[in-house]
Every structure is written in C-alpha cells, then in structure tokens.
Length: 278
Image (cartoon, rainbow, N blue to C red; front, side):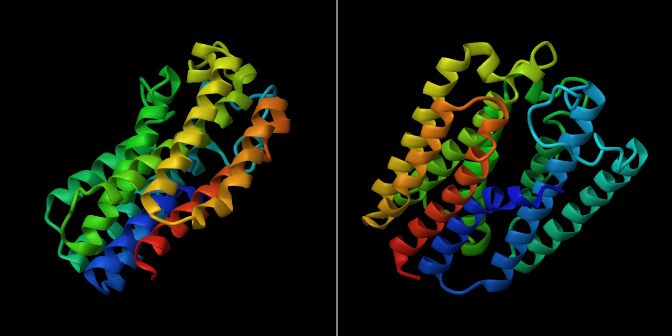
C-alpha cells in the first residue's frame, strides 16, 4: 500500500483542517474523518498505480524504483483487483460518513467521486492520464487545491478564499507535483516508449529546472503566507533535496522522494501552526 506516501496526501488536509479548527472552533470528528478519507484515497491510488504499471509493463526488469508486490509475485492480478475494489468501497463508506458527520452539502460527494476517479485512472483505464503527461495537473488540483480548500470547507462548513488560505493550497500543490516530478526523473529510462511524462517531454536538464521552480515556488508561498519565520526551519532540507536532484540519477534519486514528502508535510503543519498558534 506504500504507506510512506501518506504524509504527502495528508499535508494539505492537515493544513486546511488545522486552519479551519483555528478560525472556526473545534470540529474534531469531521477533521478525523477527512484524514481517514484522504488516507483511503491515497491507498487506492497506490494500489491502482501498481496494477496499471504492471499491466502496461512499466514495472519490468529495467525499473529504477523499488519493486512492489505484483512485480515480486506476491499478489496476482485477481488479488490486486479485489484489493482495489475493496478500497473503493472503503473510500465510499468513510467519505459518506465524513459528509454526514460534518453536515456537508451533497455536492461534496461528487467531489469525492471525482477523487476516486482520479486515484484509479492515473495508470488504469483505456487512456490513463498519467501516461500522457497530465499527472502533474491532477496532482496539483487534488493534492493542493482540493486537499487544502476541501478539508477547510468540510471542517469549517464555509470557505473564505483569502490569500492566507489560497497560498498554502497552491504551495502544497506545487510541492506535491515536485514529488511526482522527481519520481518521473528517476524512472525516465524505464518509462521511455511506454508513457510520456513531463521529464520525457522536456528532457532531464529542463526537468531539473522545473523541479527547482516547483520546490522553491511552493516553499516561498508557504513562507510568505505563514506570516512567520518558522518555515525557514525546513529551508535547508528543501535545499538538500534539490542538491540530490541535480547531482544524482536513477536509483540514487530514491532518498530525494521521502525527504521531499516529509518536508512538505512538516512545512504544511508549521504553516497552520504559525497562522493561528494552535
């Protein structure tokens, strides 16, 4: 289930939820169910991605990243489909409970349905959007805008599109895209001829420049919006991540992924704490 990816999926949700708690008071049950929904969607995305990459041949012998259960023969295609379908059911049940407990309007269910579609069609389906270079756009929307603004709305029962709320939504979105981009830089060789990710479209040097813009841009938005110097605490770690990206290739880029994921999560929490001193 690639549980190490959960901090990234929770970064925007925690930030938006804490901001809502700080401004509109305690709504702990709704916040808890938002977190569970985000976790379920992330697990669904991970399972679906593994299935799609396995069926397409991306997870072959030449893959640069770590091997997974299907590659190692630990799970059959039938077993993985069962896991995916079971996780879809879990997403629906938890999401429905979140809407009922929070008193959110019915259209939030449509947003949840869109999130389930996005989680399952990155590498699955007749035309997976992750194979034609649209993964960056969907990650920005769902891990940034929807994650921060959606969790804020569910917990607060309202939405106030002020700069202090929009900045972390965009900032977390950019940093989340950066996680996908460095993953795609690592996998350029194995992805060649199978899917067209952004690094394959623009080349490795431009992909590194793109990575720098994403990380620096996302971090600066979080720093400016926080109204505090506390986010400076993560600046050096972001810098170390970029150093790895510019000086390593292939499997040597693996440490850059968890480093960016955890730093993005930490910066999101720091942002929320700085805004309202929770």
